[in-house]
Length: 453
Ligand code: CS2
Image (tube, rainbow, N blue to C red; front, side):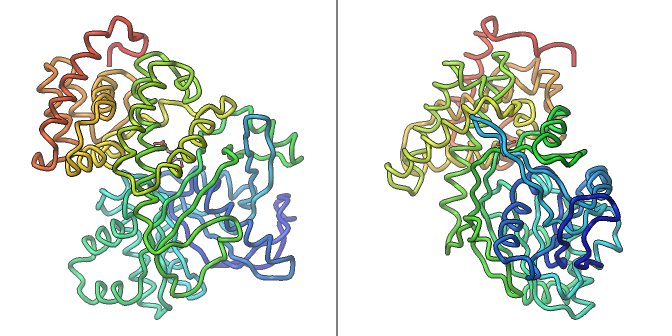
């Protein structure tokens, strides 16, 4: 991987410094650019002009488009922070190279580079289930094999997706894919550290108009600016055998056990998002802020949070503080976070966000959470609308429209949690009840989003 200190005059980009590549990233989307690349930028800035910082070689996941657009501007881009009182913008240049993840040689060379100490991942929830030849997991295995063959030092693999124990999930995925190669498995076990993280920053898709805003704020004509909220959080757990940036400088926290933080974020923020998305869409709302202004959605959200509270391992005062921050983040109407974007891939998102809370409540002997069941029911109805974007649920969606509430619930829960013994029967009954209820009130729910699929 080539990288040097040369600035980007040749391409006309405003790059002041190109840091040597020491991090490889897979999944070059807006979230990576608003989160990990921003943390790394803050660290590099704090080290001063003369110092070599941490450069990122960022590879696209499925489509090479983002890499092409970014590469054309020498991987420099604008991060617009959109608060409820205005925008501010800064240029980010911690990505030294933007590349097509489909370029296998470039990818393998990058992971095998002995100067590289870390691989970070944003491959979406669905990416951790896919074991096909072109999947993120298969690419990682190919990269690690090349690294072993090159005799390069140990490395940390850092998952930055919304899954509980995401580090362990990646490890299991890679071990599964490499299971026919005992020597590689042994090398992975001895040389790869799987770091678990909780990541948080609301980053909706940018709009064409954001390009004009970016230009106005920085003077740089950016073809692909990223819009994000001012809030950001990153909690990590695990070792970095070949070193890491001092991400603490930007507010990251390193803890022994990240699980309580992951649960807090999944069960409050992400579960809240899913509730507002499915209920809000049924009620004709388009964004999180609009759903927050709708009493029915808002009451459902508060009820959901009340159900999660007793199974979280944080003091009440801390949960209260978290919820106060979440309410104002969700109310930020300048962030146009579209419900459709959040609603996609519900089959992958609902188990860790909603079903885990239901199981924990059952284990603790608590009554069934009605709001959680209602979110699943709203998702089932959402599946029968033309808005649905969920490859894993496509087959199910076609069958649901005609099925009675009990059958629909059974089929839908079987998709979310294939082992029925892991679903509390009382929760399943409540989903059926909520589904029948929502369908009964269908007249009061907008029918705009429904129609021929
Ligand atoms: C959202 C998340 O799209 C979704 O499912 O819930 O992307 C959410 O915005 C982020 O996790 C915030 O950190």
